Length: 138
Image (tube, rainbow, N blue to C red; front, side, top):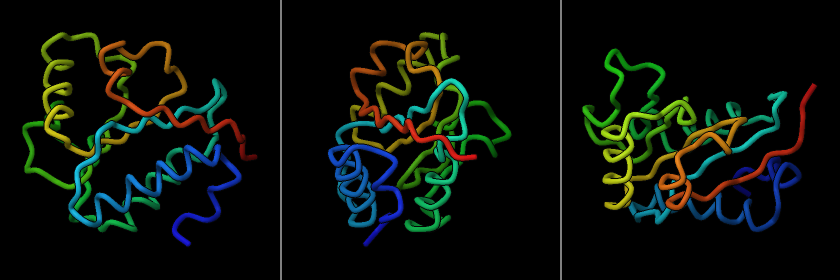
């Protein structure tokens, strides 16, 4: 089954949500919320590995990695099925936050990761599904 090895790293509800999220992307269906993969303060929770596996599953042509952009704004790029945003906890600019809320309103699939959920803007959190990844890899 898709991402079977991740079942032990999150709750059943979060795992089921993740599977549905990826299947929606593959079937050109919208997702209602952005996924935030939340790890512990120490990191090493598998967030990046899981995102890489999602990219492989949906195909690189359908995936926009904001870490690879020349411009800081991923919303100025061609539309892809899934956008991976990084550093969301540092987003304080109201204009950038509003751009993100706008694309979420129109059901753009977005995934991000953080070890500091508490630092993410509350309006963004309200449009997100937080998946806790408490497992720590050595």
